[in-house]
Image (cartoon, rainbow, N blue to C red):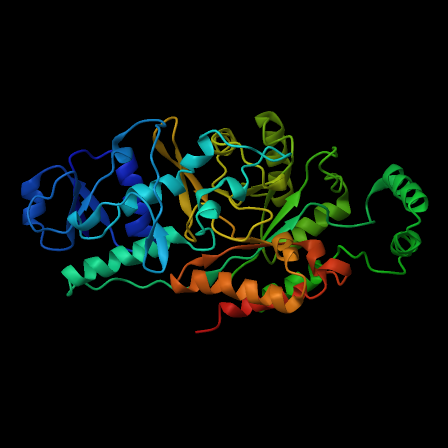
Length: 433
């Protein structure tokens, strides 16, 4: 166990030390404000305060860790070996940066509470982030800093045996609409037909009625393929089905249709299933509660996980609504058009509410790649190269890689050609040494 001496055991200090020490490095951590307890402790120990007490392992703490609410924090990004960091403390500490304050800044999404320009869907964009502006978005810096901290601790406590963790993959399958043509109802089918005619999309028109008449397979119905891949994989896939009402942004299948309910139940026999929260439910807890109850009725089990439509997040409200409804996990933390680590970590972390200064029970699983982001690379070879780079970053810290694919990604239609191969590459990466 690591004992940390500090002048004040603040909620922020407890939160970030537990993420770095327990979740990433696998060691228990406890805290004390009594110097005599630090002296008496006969295992890993350090001080995290303003002044070093003697020759102990010491990290000079940044003021942000003992404040409440937001303040005008100066962030000066500097190089640190093969990565970057901020909150520099120089040679006065056992490591040159206060990685705990820097990690808290990223994990709490401090920057997303500050004034910033949002996109047309009201989202915080990658280009507004520190990671993008200073060139470290592609690295899980919080995990990298944790391993640098571990190395420094190991040098001072050479007899201590640190546990090891292994690289893993948690594939996400997002299902905004289970079918392209099936189960859409008469009005939507007629509307789609008229649109195809006006836009001279005769191939689409032919395919629509070939599917509806049972002559062809619906192109979005890739569930048999995905479940077969699941059977060969040790990690369970996590599906998110949209079951919200039809709207401008959400054009899924009516959740009362028996065939759709049967599909969700069938998928749940092999994989985990969560709720894809509809566009308007993100801001309206009443709609969210209705969708949660609807999914629980289908699954006949309490809903555990959610993912927001269009990867929209309004912090802290979006997460507070999930907490109020006792949803345990969320998979929205990531960027639609950029590959990388929005919160700087490839280790799941609990949401910290900056307004209330409290660690919440909601576990955030940040995703690192959305299938759309790979479209920025034209050739399949380029896509593979980029994919292998992000996998390698996660592997170096034995983290968990979370990719998001859609059910329609596995069709062989136009832009999605080769994506089955990319998905298999991800699955196989968990079996490589």
